[in-house]
Image (cartoon, rainbow, N blue to C red; front, side):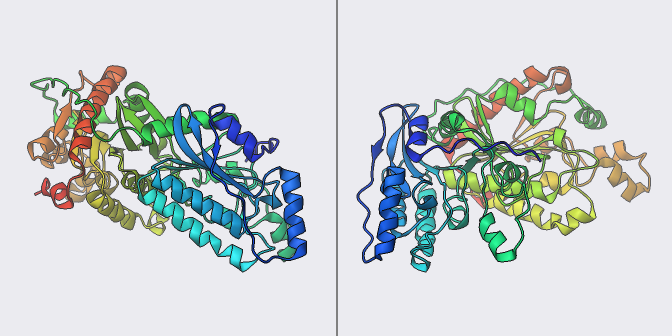
Length: 497
């Protein structure tokens, strides 16, 4: 893996000036107090103030970012390597709590070697207070966005550095739990290269992006435009006029059409239909799966967390694995945290059937996705876009509203698999598809699907127009869901009676 060269380290004030609108910064800080400390430590603090030009390792305050009021907590590495002692922790907690009281999104820019060794365990345990303050901020439904800088390690990375709704890192930054110098001193060997880097964390699904400082204001502003979009008072969007009657397409013909390699998937849907998209990445816990696309998005003015099964990322060699379902659960929690509608998109040839998938707990992850979707405290909308094979598709189905492309379908197994079980051959797949009533049209007749989006005659033949029709339906449905609020678990299950 190629690691980007490390840029010159910006000071806290330089990064604040880069991210916030000119002249808008207002400090919230008061002079730190340390109590009874040694003369040696007092001298170190004085030297740190002289070297860094600031009075502690964290600065806090507020400003405008693209005209939007935001709160900021920013680390300063030149002050004792950005270490966190009691005074710095007090400043952090006070600022986070103020941001929560005033209903402000919070931008954090950690850079630190971790706990301040001069203060020892009393400083170390401050991470608990900081974490509680961040948790309360998030519980209030307020965005917490993190930019990890070089280096961020130790207790800082293990607390406020790892709790962002969206987490971005500086190119080439050293980011990890145990500092490499400590590792080498303890074990008398160097830490493996390329592990504690922002690029590796992105590849592992731990952070959402790697961006240079000059791009941070733009991406954070776009993210906040979605995260802070109005939940109520959105102008009702007229329902698109459906094409009636829909042209009759035989079941097996619909299945065949849904499998066309040129059929538009979630990426083209977002490109042609969404008004804004911020891709996210992975579970945040060391896993990612190319078979799932997770993003913050808007359709018209309606914001959402978007979880799409990505047909481009699913191959015979790498079908959708349990990692994708754990990644989806991150998106479900994010929607609940921020009160955003959740959109799930079914488009899968099926979850992985392999020893690796079994070892990864595939069945349990399907169950947990179903549990999360049925109970999530956020409005939910499912889009059946194409193939819908097995438990991997079902895991994305429960929702307050379900819409479907005309040729989408849902089946417990591929029709060929059902044929193999019942007839011990593959030749009866078309017959099994018809008998099992897998079509979106059949599911509408049973009350499982609420609305069908026409294909004229096939989404693959009119990808842009089709995606725009789907987008118009999503915009209409999301606006209505935002007004209605989340349904109850019982209501979500009732459609399957």
